[in-house]
Image 1 (cartoon, rainbow, N blue to C red):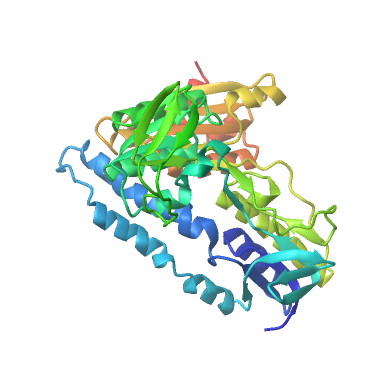
Image 2 (tube, helix red, strand yellow):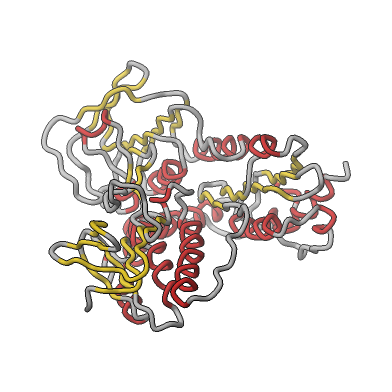
Length: 444
């Protein structure tokens, strides 16, 4: 290993990996990744990958209970946790480190900090970047002061669950809270959610309402408009991943104390800015991913990293740098039951910039293909349309709608109009036929 590289990236999660790879691919330039934990980052070991590994079997079990011709299946907790362990490689990052080596990127282990002009300190080493330093250190759970003394679970414990709490409290009503409630209830926990305001307040209200109904159908006690004012846990504490962090926890909500075996706090995240210098950010220092303050979604961070890496590559090679694209919509999928898949603004958000924006709504069951997925599907689809007919956004709620959202993303990026979408013919009988039903709604 050397101590001098063309590009140094602090943070070896998917975002940092993409930034480094795209900066040097097809060139003789050099890059290194500095990582204090596991190569692959939060997404690979504690968030996206393990959560989806845990959520898919409960989804299939729910389908089996609502599909004539199948006998309902049951969740095997041990097998489900073993599936999670497989997908996180038993928390061994040698695969990620091997990938970096295979594409010519060095991995430097340790805490990286920007300490000088294009300089990064890692322990007693000082690395120097000839061209740029990229910080892709992500984010961490933000734990309110009231919960710090009880060592609550975070998303890492929820995805890394080993001890299944008999009684679990979840504080928060966002994506992490809703998805974790789903798989932990499937594992056998009696789950109570304390939601300060409303559930999933960044999606269309009808989508949040359908998810709320779905959670309650699963036996999850969702309490809206309830804040937890205090928490206490007597006795010794521990922080073993996915283990109970001590004895029972007592929570005070609405002036009433209740006891739980564990509490998961999912009330937001803080940016991991420890690697950054205190002064104004110089031109050679770049932030990408969660730490930049942009949407905390892996696919979005990787997209931004690809753009940044490509730009750094062009700068180093002395070739023209393409102009930055305009506004790009951010897609997202929430893997609850029912699923939520959305891209672009909600109707309310769209009207702030486009007063003439309107919505086209149809039941998700208006597509024959959806009705073939399960016997009693529920859900709704919405297109948000500008006054001139351009598609601005879309939201789909229902079974397996995750596979519908990319078509909407392409249409929004392409600034397609309803008139053009009439000529994008959906196959029959598929869930994509909902697009035709939405277009027909525009005729009413």
